[in-house]
Length: 168
Image 1 (spheres, one colour):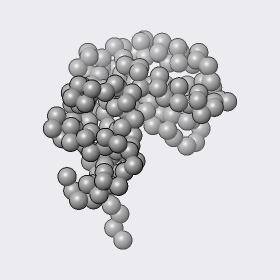
Image 2 (cartoon, one colour):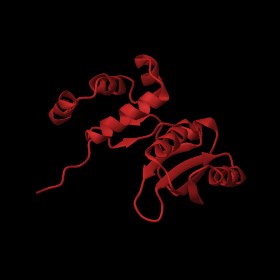
Image 3 (cartoon, helix red, strand yellow):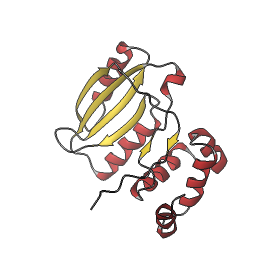
Image 4 (cartoon, one colour):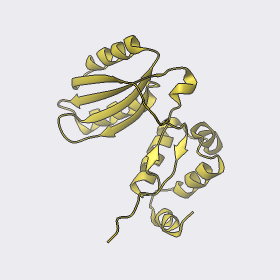
């Protein structure tokens, strides 16, 4: 662990961050193994990973391994909420964490509020998933695009990589 990462962990007011970091190193990033070793739920794991990202220790996190589940149709889905309270937003994000189709979610600024990376068995299932999402309360718009990866791979587990520092 680099000294600036140790310093960030030591300064954190959040408990268990060093324990999570060490478990990630010990298990080579296996999300399921980390959760078993630390006896925590997927929601708690996701919250702790968000803290690691905010501390600048984890730059990229993948919570799911969709290809291992036999689903290879990848989609990008853009979602806009309407009239959402902070509680609605928290509930929506918890639903995303629990949804096995969602491999990643980012809050974005612009015409939409979220960019979701999802995996499905085929394009029909992806389209139905997007239609179902549109029917949820507080969802104003959903745009889904199927993706055909040209190169590269999504890795299962947890990748801890400190963000690059800008040269001054």
